[in-house]
Image (cartoon, rainbow, N blue to C red; front, side, top):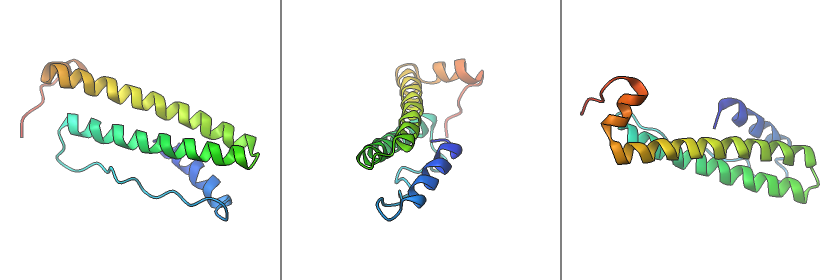
Length: 113
């Protein structure tokens, strides 16, 4: 989730906090020292949480007949789904090819800890 999309979400939820709970920070937080595969798994978890949040927000907006906000959340949802597919694709390549694929991305070999 980009910082700009997160900011737009918080404005919506703050504005309507009498009807909607303010979203909590995600549980899947990146940690120092993670391997690339682990970082991508964290990214996938974060994107899934964002997708769930934006889906729920879109449903609420629809029920409240707030079409502009619904459209915004559906746009953000599309962005998050694209991020999810990107991270899943990269993780899948790394799971299958390991360091050889990482070299194609960075031009450098990953050092083991």
